Length: 181
Image (cartoon, rainbow, N blue to C red; front, side, top):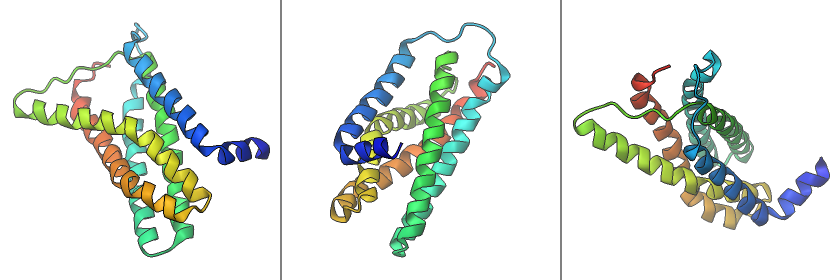
């Protein structure tokens, strides 16, 4: 296992490219597949809430990681970043599982709120695609203690990842009244 980890770390640019393509292509593929087609198991219908909770934790972990690094506490910063990656990974598994099983839910709001919802949703989706390679490059350059390079990556990664995490929760709050399960 350690040998595999060393290969991944030593070839981090290739790892970032492969993981970015796999994650984003899997999500695009799922958006074109029909849902399960039957009544969803209860545990599947709970996954959007789980996703929102995981996004909330990711946001908090990132926020506290930012505070820790501003206070120059690298050890605490790393722990919060590892926690953010853990909750994001769990989110991704839950998200893929839900969207493999369930049909997409159309937004049912009316009036000006519709424009706001779609602005948040579209920016969330676009930046979620972008955050995959940014977060991975930030992680690997931090892990390898490439501080000048790491700082250049996180200058973009941190605010965008915070935005994606926060808007993920907001999208859930806005769409959840329209779930039919």
